[in-house]
Length: 104
Image (cartoon, rainbow, N blue to C red; front, side, top):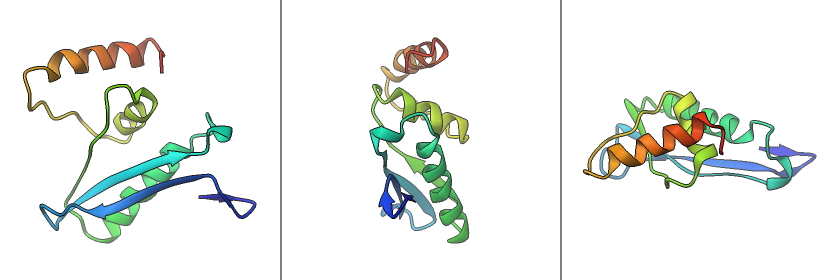
């Protein structure tokens, strides 16, 4: 995404190498000068539209616990956590609490 011909936000829509029918949202980022303008949401949504156009049957992403603004965006876009480790339930409980308290 550009503003006055200057890149201000980006995200990558990849094909997940473990399953060609699955898309992978990767490297979402925005220029900090534009924080709070919804750019992360917009470029993430653009990746989902791209993957739909490519007929991806599902979409995944990975992120870190401390990236609360990004996690809030991904939840708004309909992503759900995948609990695959015994530590995940407590970690997600903490994440939901911090997001609901608007700590991010």
